[in-house]
Length: 174
Image: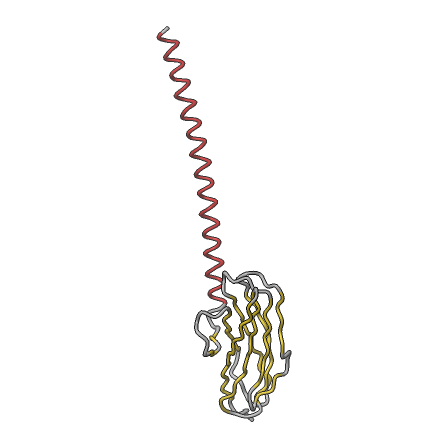
């Protein structure tokens, strides 16, 4: 009888260890997958941050808690008489559900807009980022500006924000 109890106790112990080991393996695998997902997310975040490292904030008199932010990038400095491509990046407040966004561009004196003047985004995803390619041409050297009026409709409210993009145009080289 003692032998039978020992065998039964050993079998119970082995099956308990096996089950615990299986659970531990499953928990380890789930943890490894979660960690890989977190690392991938961190890599994606780092990649996105690097892609936006050379963006410059457009100037606005609105407080920092506006529903949208506007940044821009240019590959070369503006030169009189030469077209200049600007990349505009409009980012939304992460928690705000926006119905529509309308961006209207207005060049200042000495600057000609050679691309679309208006961009519209209907029912954008919450926290979305919008990229717009704009081409301008400086007709005179000095400090020039491109104005951007952004109208944001959200629920029953509309908010308008005005941003300025300063450009310093250099005289064309012969």
